[in-house]
Image (tube, rainbow, N blue to C red):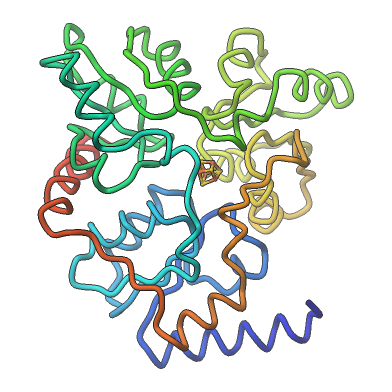
Length: 311
Ligand code: SF4
């Protein structure tokens, strides 16, 4: 797409959003031209907070489906739109509510902590929700003798065991994008760029190894944590182990510093289903509305509220 077409479509999207009293929220993994037209860009936790706080009539969620569902749970009186209904998440799809009910039945009395990358129905079966930004605080708030079922991301679960010293019962789910970032990718980069700081998302297949064998230049962070770290750091060069969309935001927020993706293959095809054109059409044609059954939403909200009360 030419820059003229991009800027025309961005103007159209902005005008439609104003006309229809809609706020545009975009995840850090969205394509640059969508990030640039959004009213707010952030990670799951930040976007949830914005969704809950906005005064706008509608929220257009440029992210994946479970995120739009979370916005609908937090803002039941607002219309929530997603520009492409097929924007799913392989991690959220790794456990269904039926599978969780079966797992709970095998572990009576256990507390269920669900990462935010889950469907509304799975959240409704959970005691606590968490994001990568507050998962440690959530686990530490639960009584030490209490069994915890943690789902669905096994790499995040293993990392949490290491940082909290707690034994967790972990669901063996993974995100195909982050699981694909391997220790070899990190080793190759660390050899090539020994002066760089390494920023690693805890969902990565390399996270627990990076932590075990890393050095003072290795930092395991949520995406928002990466942004804050890069802005505050006096260092100039950073290797980034997460979905590559974050590089655009890092370049904008910390101009003049150098950011490189540890793996150029770390691209989420679901996040990239949201295009500027689909965003414009979504606002123009008022599609696709995301709703959550009221009873499921009320139970899911309980898990989210318990998370917010801790972090
Ligand atoms: S990067 Fe992974 S966890 Fe994030 S939306 Fe894509 S598939 Fe889901």
